[in-house]
Length: 228
Image (cartoon, rainbow, N blue to C red; front, side, top):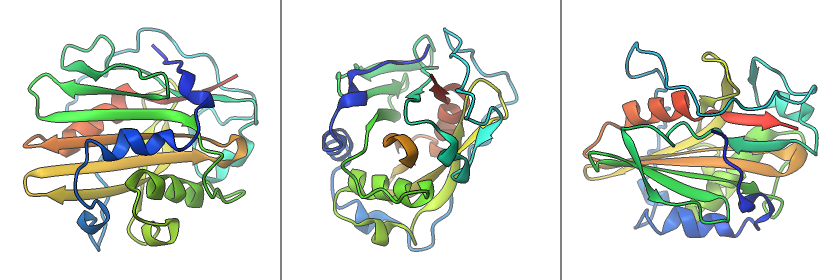
């Protein structure tokens, strides 16, 4: 199942309401000075659950085998970019926040230890950097965190991989910030597409749960789909 939301036309300001409410405290102060990426290696050797619906083919200008930051320049302005919803019929996850109509929704693990908060939508209100999806993704991370600038975030963020398209080995380059507060650990992973001023992010937020395994499952079952 791919997810279509009214959030594609939402203002970038709606990002903050989803991100900061569940992540209390000063997030910027909880970012490690020596960042490392959350591993996205699948937690088990078993096959990933298939999405309920097959996403449409990528536009002719979009690479079919993966999407680096540099490849973002090939995305046409008319492209539709959204999360493929692999948790919709997954017994290990349950909806904790339904689609809000502004590009945001969330799932929680059935054991109650972790939440995955997804967002997709328009980011034209952010300080995007033409031709540099990495820098624009840092701007999206900074906006989600709320009390930092892109210049603050760049040395603290790492490049990570999200799922992309329909292939099991396809990856999408993204930028990631991790942090912790006691037994709570979280990772915000974002990708902005400067060519069409669109962006996606996901927050994996665990208290007592396995952040690495949860992030791996997010990557495996919820690819970013570029179509149109």
